[in-house]
Amino acid sequence: MTVSSGNIVTSTGSFNSGATQTTVNGSTAGTAICSMPFAGASYKKAMIFLNGFNGSGTYTFPASFSGTNTIVVGGPLAADVTVTATNASITTTTNTSGGAVIEGY
Image (cartoon, rainbow, N blue to C red):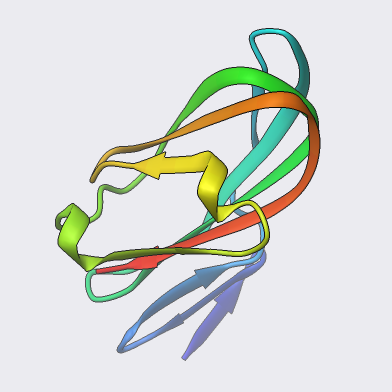
């Protein structure tokens, strides 16, 4: 195992606690803070936190998932997130705050 600058790398993949956070603006109001702390070959996980987000916006994953049949979206705002292998589309009709977790292969 190697530890450097917020990254833990093992033979089975990596966790990046310092993963780049991307801000996606809602088309009407608010923001979504998005990051992908796990981006290994066999496991990927993206996090989305909405802060007064209203309207629509898209987060492009830094590492693509293998396909949509391997992705699970969870959390209280899972219904507001639609995913493809390369991005997450967020759509709300009111100012919304909370999170969603996207996991898969």
